Length: 394
Image 1 (cartoon, rainbow, N blue to C red):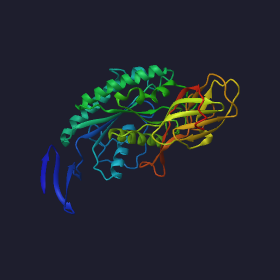
Image 2: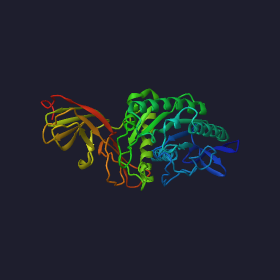
Image 3: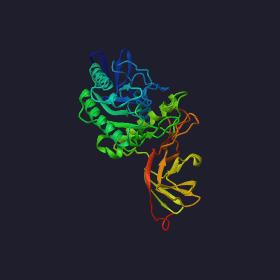
Image 4: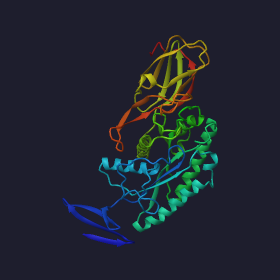
């Protein structure tokens, strides 16, 4: 057995099991398997459900620590992502990293809340600097691999173009600030979960901007992990997810981050174009696998601009597109919406924007028993073109 003691941490090697050599650490009297270097920082900043406390059945108390190397115990966005990240490592029998979650929630965020010099951005840098210093006692560096970003919750009337510009500017600056705070060279990726609006209003163009950040700003490391319209909101909370729903979103965000950081694709189906030929409209998606409509009665599609009273009668998924059938050929300057632009007075706990299109991927949740995760199509809006296509495809 070889042993080394430095700065309050004891590390030693042993062949205690089947002749195999393992590394261990002893922290404050507790011996645990040595976690790899560096420690991983996960940053979550903004509104949405960033500050919601999620119910964690396993909080990995020896591997998830705050900037003071204490158990955070808050269950908020970054902590929940850390738990999901470690649960995946457990599932695949991988070593568990030390993870430092840094959550800075800002309720009803507006543009000023995320500009340079804003208090929230300063707190992120301060927490990372403190964690970096504290981790020297464990002989570990700190590396931030992702930033979870949710902006403009308090400014829903922001235009799509302005929201796109704001997200890009904040991401560009915050990635640099985080990298400088930890001393790393690579910049973190940026995880966004597309917002859904409120229980009675889903007309914000911020939603549309969020849904296309990865297409418009690939170089800034954006990953749109999931839309939030499929998830339930809290009682008397028109725009805030329940703790259980927020946990599902965090797990999807963690899965998306892990896939992208491993050099693999992750993107939710995205509505790209629509063409109509007679009484059938074809909605084309960019997707990683074949589309599925999980609930035909709540498929999520609507067409604006119909002048002759044509009504949609059915929706059918076929590979990378959805066929929408009408009782007669719609006439007018048409626009197709999916899970966006809805308003209503009935309150059932879900956002006004609804939809049930996913791709074929699914996974059993590691954080919520008896729960299946899906990759839902993001909310979108496109103009409809008149085009003859049915001769070759129906």
